[in-house]
Image 1 (cartoon, rainbow, N blue to C red):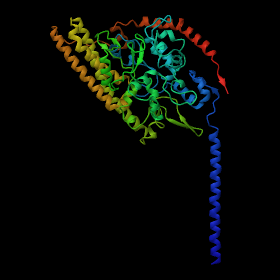
Image 2: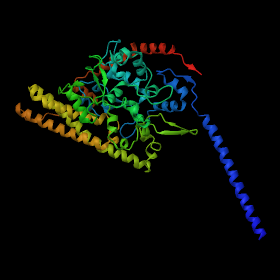
Image 3: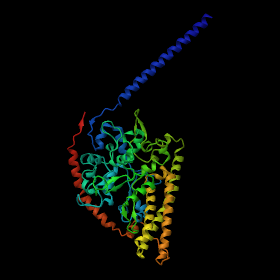
Image 4: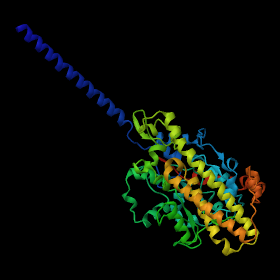
Length: 501
């Protein structure tokens, strides 16, 4: 009996000793981990100026974020529809030339390569022309608004109205840093912030307090500063005549609500060269479409999928390699969805295939409507006879463009985009019926032939575009004016001190 009691006591002592040793081990591990974490505590190396536009200077304080951001320079990924490689969309789909006849996009429309190339791509585009001086060229300064962290710097110096004034070429020497840190972050706290006035003003007109948004909401709103629909409002309350960048959200931001906004103020982006319709160009209503999708409904932000969190060396941070989630499915989609990669990719492509099938049909109908409207004018149609027809073309193409220009819209919100395209097809068909009736009234019942626009070159020739002249002007601009911009920018930035701790 005595022997059994001793054995029990020995086992108890052993168990207590094991627990104590284990606890000490856990404590030692925790202390080591805390020391390791301490080494990652933010210790700024430089004092960031309030409007510091240089991404590499920010990168000295936020190395991991900066190093991941630099990877946006990689343009090797291509998905079934786009990716981040530069693609000449007019070569891929020459019908776009007809849809945008008389507008800059008919000259040149390439899929952008992403934030890292924002300045380079807009400088190289034929849409910005070949200016010879500060007061020359086809585009206003407003076109720089979303291209660089130099923009909030300039707006802070001169105010938005002065920034929007003048030609695009007039501020070329000021804008050299590609989209980056200061576009979305405060320098001291790294808190997300809105640096473009158009979004702030639109939200305020809706009665919303911009300080009331949560961090999760801000992870989408900083994107919405630029990935939204906008127009150049020359009848603005600040200074008439200045193309003040404005969001048409006063009625809401569905395709019908923004269309009504534009119709009520009789705004047009341009007059179509063939049909003479007063056209709207959807810019990139990505945020508006995203807000109608299931991910927004579930509280998923843009950054959750396009900039998913990453762990490196024991530290969790936001991966600033902004890209298609299809190139990072493990860290974006599969954080929530447990399906295999192939299944998830198929889910995306299935939705895109079905939406694009109908979008292509709408595109063809609108091209036909433009060509037929031109024929109606040639046969002597009057303004009164064409009024409803031109409005129909305007509305059909606005719906097509809303679907096409909303980056990733066919996946972000396939139900809404499918609805929008369907309404566009109905609008285009009704317009063509009106055209057929007008032809009969004018004494014609023959079919208007569809033009040979099988290539970009043929389509541009069909609308009378002298593309070689535009290319020559751009070459001269890059030889004569662009180097002066770069020289002035370097001289300016060389004078900016970087204060190191």
